[in-house]
Image 1: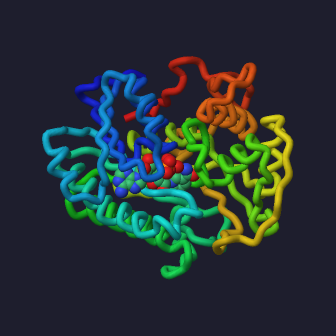
Image 2: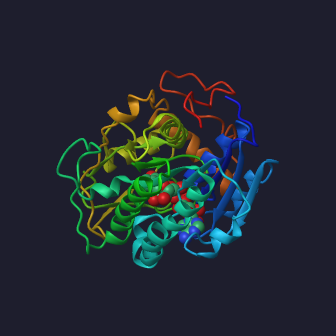
Image 3: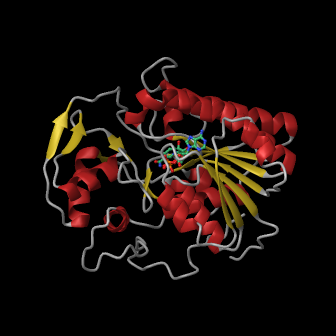
Amino acid sequence: MSMNSNEVRCLIAGGAGCLGTNLARRLLDQGAHVDVVDNLSTGRQANVDRLSRHLNFDFIKMDITDPAICRQLQRRRYSHVYNLACPTGVPNIKRLGEQMLMASSAGTLNLLKIARRCKAKYLFASTAEAYGDPDVFPQHETYVGRVDPVGPRSAYEEGKRFGEALTRFWGGKYGVEVRIVRIFNTYGPAMSPKDQRVIPQMLTRLIAGHPVPIYGDGMQTRTFLHVDDLVSGLLIVVDKGVSGEVYNVGGDEQITVRDLFGAVKKATGLAGEAVFRDHFIDDHRGRWPDTTKLQALGWRPSISLEAGIRQSYQDLLRSLGIKQAGAAAGPAHRRDGSAPASGDRSQPGSP
Ligand SMILES: NC(=O)c1ccc[n+]([C@@H]2O[C@H](COP(=O)([O-])OP(=O)(O)OC[C@H]3O[C@@H](n4cnc5c(N)ncnc54)[C@H](O)[C@@H]3O)[C@@H](O)[C@H]2O)c1
């Protein structure tokens, strides 16, 4: 699908991060104009440098919580505002909890104001953690969750829940076309080698020859989605979703952290040991998205976990400056074993 850069002008907050940079690349490849605003707190300059090769790309280093952002961007007109800006990573909650709360509240408000001025479509990236430690499986969008508002993870979880409430409220009160996506664990190229989330941590530690920590007994379950499938989901929600609605986006196969470790070793051929440790923070026993609502818009995940891990491994090797024969970070293969054809990265649901 091709776009006109005068008509499709996107602001991606958090575009220096893993998901934002992949979204930006997809939109740029399709011909959109993309501005990324990011304070580089958990994002990477290297991701911005790669995007900067595109003519229709601009980077603004700024914090979305700074009210000056509305003035700074006041001459720019956007058709779409994607709010992905928030520090991430459970180990970062202690250090960056206040920034998480402020990004999802003050930052969300600033970006909603920009969307309102521009009459842009607005997408808020929320999280599976909005469901807390769920007691219902799979989690449907109508499930209200089990969250401790003052628990150790609450800065991230309640921040996102507030961001959802503000997004929904503004959509109704000011007629801004808003959508909310609850993103479940997503991984893929452009992850930072410093990222402490489970897949990048397993990969970087195995690459370094260090033991891989598994917290608790490793029987907690997660689902994993490749970032290309995530980006397709976001674009479909923006294009075909209903204003004010919430959509889960995530992988459909549950896997324990123990089995994930085996899958990472198998996909990469790396050897290594796990060390079992007490969890440093309350862990959630499981997460599993009900994606019926998104699938009704035409979305289907297409990249297998094994192929996605292999591609992420190769990308991390490149980020770490490690050369390996045949390790170019090419496209991940689809579940049926075929590689996506060039131009096949787009989905019918792009904005
Ligand atoms: N990757 C996942 O599995 C996952 C799961 C659930 C939700 N999400 C959400 O999706 C979004 C993107 O996640 P990601 O995996 O790319 O994480 P990431 O940490 O790689 O990206 C987040 C980006 O936001 C930027 N940022 C943080 N605070 C900011 C601020 N105040 N102003 C400007 N920029 C700021 C960071 O520098 C970073 O580039 C986040 O909002 C995250 O909460 C991701």
